[in-house]
Image (cartoon, rainbow, N blue to C red; front, side, top):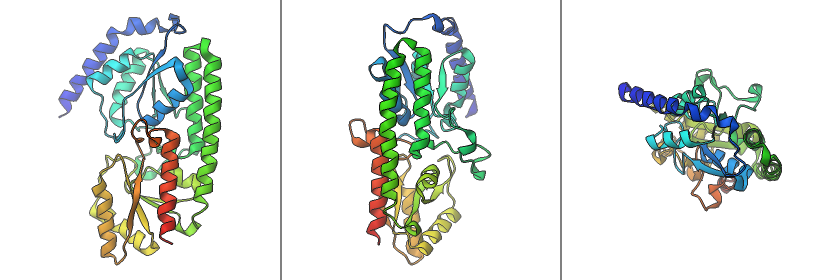
Length: 315
């Protein structure tokens, strides 16, 4: 199974090397007369680039609604889009695990690739021991941390297209103000739930930054990456925790199979306690384009409203 993927990577390398002459002259190209061609990996980054870049950018998002970035692999079409982009934005911190080799090859070839988490101080990142010494990549669930990603995108676009620097600064300032309001909204909504009731149980451990920022005890059935499989013992241990704490609701995720959390619900029932599924949360992917949840702000508001409503309903 490894050989086809190795050959595919070699093909990618050849394609990238063939474009080296073009990439090497990118600094000399005046981009002020056309839109900046941008590729972003996850929807949350696509949304940031659209807000900061405005009309100056033409953004392609690789991973749409319901797509799990932990398991996503680049297609041949993706490789073409990446090669044609003026700049590529990705999360980093091993979120796009299967695409790491592609992004590394692009870096080596001289392409402009930017990890939006690079501006976040490493001493405030979470490094769960079960994640093999790496950092938890789900930083967007702490809105105050995600504001750093906005600044990183702004600075990268200014460096690429200095003629539009004022536009990028103004757009970023306006968006950062919205995110500050969002952060305060989440704090206010979380405060409606008594501290002892602030327990968030989901399919995988995507919400640890959310828990730290907004005061929730977060438990996930799977680990930080959905590539990790949950065992029967994992299900039973989580069910015992829910029953002992009398947690009224648990939550499914849009990018993780629902059966995982339904198994927990059944196990809780065997412990003599009934827990409801409080709704669907958006974790590694946003909602459909054109819906409120299809934006980062709408996604975060949906999540906190769903969590608080379900937990308060159990009182």
